[in-house]
Length: 382
Image (tube, rainbow, N blue to C red; front, side, top):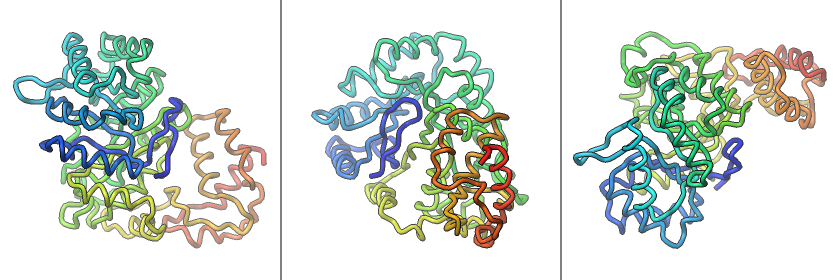
């Protein structure tokens, strides 16, 4: 399993992580079987949004003797009441819910303390200025969590949280259909059929800005909804009008700026094995570019997807990386020092481009790569 660093936290996570849905309704023996497979494969990051006590107890037992091998993304503000899940901002409930989580998992800390499900600006303001954020920061100071995270489906809210400097990790819904939708406080709008009735063109600029800002500021992204709840894998249900493969969805998410880990929405061991198999899959079977270019309801014409089809460059330029750095500069309005350093480390610079156009002939999205190289040479001075 290839590992990535989770932004500025320094925590190393496998590219493929595990959502907790697959553990629900499973016995301890089944949960242990799942965890055994994950340990062997290097799937080390586990999302823990559900407060279900049986799930927490079973996972805690299965973690005994190997807790240090896993990165736990524990959620704040999610509690169990009257036999069902409840999201809360009541600090007494938040504290009790988190302590219950640690106790049932048999651990005294969690790597990520994820403030759960913040999809409106009003909710973000309440969290930011209220007891919940103060509690999260206290947990970080005392070592009960190593970093503060937040989960959201709304790019506007997420940008506000990332730019605040208060969160280190963002759990965000990333897939090629949701990425074309503008910000909305109603998460159900992301999969509403009416929003896909007309052809959609290019990524929502706020979502693009979000990913680039996360990379620039070192906020690591853990991905949820990479398969759109499974809809993207079905020709009948896909909002794009055509089915994609799990490996194409995973590759898309993992090539977005800032992304460190994709939480697999596995409902069976076979689902999980299929996601793990991504690591050894041929590049041709991961490749989403040509599939995306042929989607009947969606177009990314002129938009760089960082898919790498522009390679190889006769001059040795990493055209996709140069374009990514150029876009980071555009988003910021200046050259961040980290971007300057990463550009300087490239073996070949944009100024070496001879304008042969070979990269453009291979691009499925019609990106003006040669012009991008010219602009990058001006921006970076080489």
